[in-house]
Length: 169
Image (cartoon, rainbow, N blue to C red):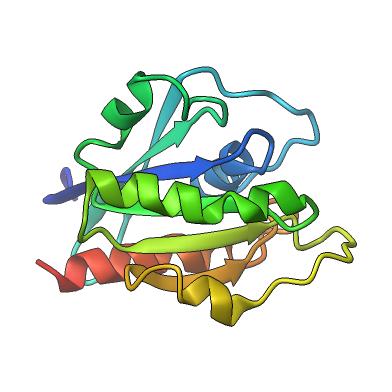
């Protein structure tokens, strides 16, 4: 089979250290590293998906400290979808979700958004109302509790983005 016909850009957005890179690594390579490596700028990975229409997901993993930089909005340009990642063990990353959603929508009003509440394999006392998160935007197609370490819901989140984008063709 040759190159896929449908190529799209998904941007991973979230605070520093929430696990964006680990989620991409789990999805693309089915691997996880305990070693923390901070992303600098943007890292682009791709994965070929064989569904009813073969497609290539171009995954833009943006560093978590970029929001204040003017370059941040440039990274969002051309995105067909967003995965906004928060750390279930870090309340400030969850509180930052509305701001991340607003930034994404300023770049692409119609793009679907999935929220990944990552590090579900770790213990936490933080209470999260999934219902209140859903109300943040009509663009939110789903909210997943994920674990890049165990792989929990990682395939699901990327596959749902793929299905939604294919359905819009």
